[in-house]
Amino acid sequence: MEKKFVLGDVVVMIADGPKMAVEGYFLNEDTKTGTLTESDELVNVVYYDGSEFKRETFHQDLLLFIDEVEG
Image (cartoon, rainbow, N blue to C red; front, side, top):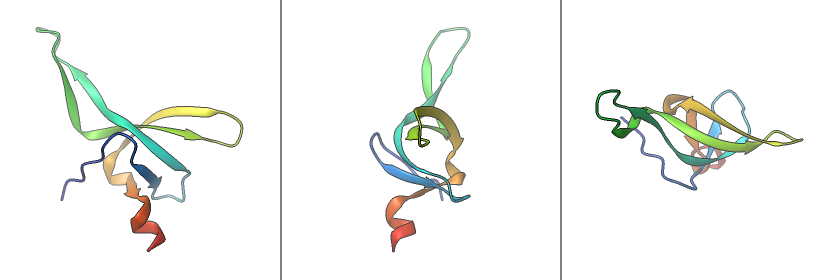
């Protein structure tokens, strides 16, 4: 089942990763038309690694909603 994260969702990476805030889905650009479309799989997240904020892209299957972990 495909997850649908939305801007601001707090997620955790399955491999005991840090808490992250969803920034949105990775955008794919159509080279012919220049149209941008959201990826069905890749999610952009922002997180703090203890010394600085980082922005990375992860496959959505590696991420869990924070309430799935806390429950």
